[in-house]
Length: 252
Image (cartoon, rainbow, N blue to C red):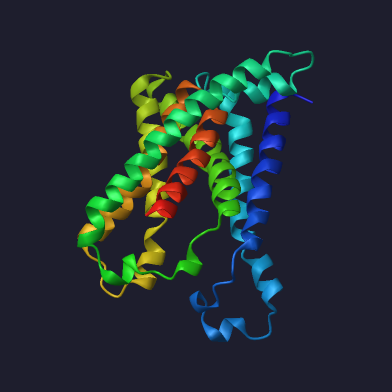
């Protein structure tokens, strides 16, 4: 089996563990119209809620597996070494990835915390007081956020964008990579808007700006790490970001 296919399958399995972690979340029945709940058990509804992320994960891993070998600057170096027969230097690469991921995660977490502190006093009360039960637990944050979202957004979406932009410009250059990083981050941030429109009666322009900025700033850092250090560094950084936010929240 070719190396890039092994990498794609490994990342799919890792991403699937994140999808399974969603089953540990309390079921948010208030987010679904009552008529749609009739006739379904809670476990059935929980399983149904995993279909959409499973489809997204599948599409992302297929696209990433096909395209990332064609974008020379995007790699998963530690995973490549682990899956390559006879490779014995992956521990050093993992240590380098962990160092980059730790620094990136701390910076991203600090940025998110600062933005929240600056914007929170000016945001609608309904948004700042969203029910705590809708917040992801630590398993979801680390496994789904840290692994699944990075496989979807960096390995899948950012790789697709970088490949498409390289085709247009006929080369992989820093400008096309930065555009891919920014687009992937902004598209992820925009995906948070529908739930805001459902939960908040009056959505202000400032709230939309905060959602887009707050959810894209970390993604820009993860995208840079994927480009400059490797996918593993982006995954570690995403996990560390959640740990930083949880740590600060616990102390406040």
